[in-house]
Image 1 (cartoon, rainbow, N blue to C red):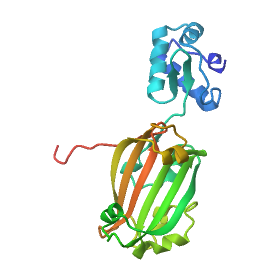
Image 2: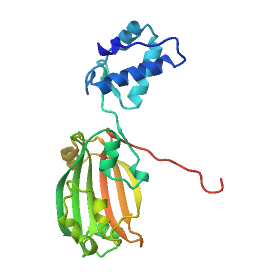
Image 3: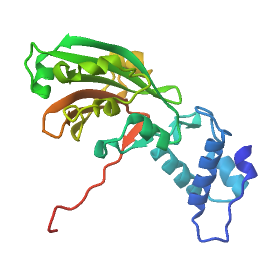
Image 4: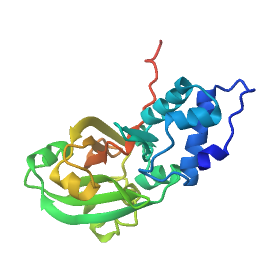
Length: 252
């Protein structure tokens, strides 16, 4: 087996469990162990590398916690896809840039792009009247051809009508909105919640009923503090994690 072609250095100060973790990750990245394939048992790893079962168990447990592996009772330990570590909730960065930084290839499918009347919740978040028109955009977004998130976006029609003329499959929305200072997004308020998959999620995110979904609601404002974008993003809970950097309050 590919893993057993590697060696653990027992003369270094680097902990044995950490070395084993790095070896397993290396083989996953190299493609030696593909998604849903079973890795060697704790007993096999312990015997081949001549290390304790406790050391092996610690390495495997941490890889499970980090999303590299998953366990199936009475069957073994299998390779999963590691979660995409995203920090867009604290940065104004496009989805494509985030995914490229993760070493994957982003792509987008436009499910809907049309004009509609604002519902009460849309009107409230865009600070417009319920009868006003909005541009509605529904996108399905991928990383290496795997569906990661769906996003429903609403824009006030009176200033964003020009968005309808653009190719949202290949163009970034925020770049398009930079066309005028009225529509350029300067800052965003985001709300992160946990929920479960709906029928729509099952269809577009390829998840099972009841799967965890990370629901992120965003309101993007222009330089004049007018809301220009109201978006509802539904991320697969099994493929995404979000990083937030926290600073102490001033004078502390």
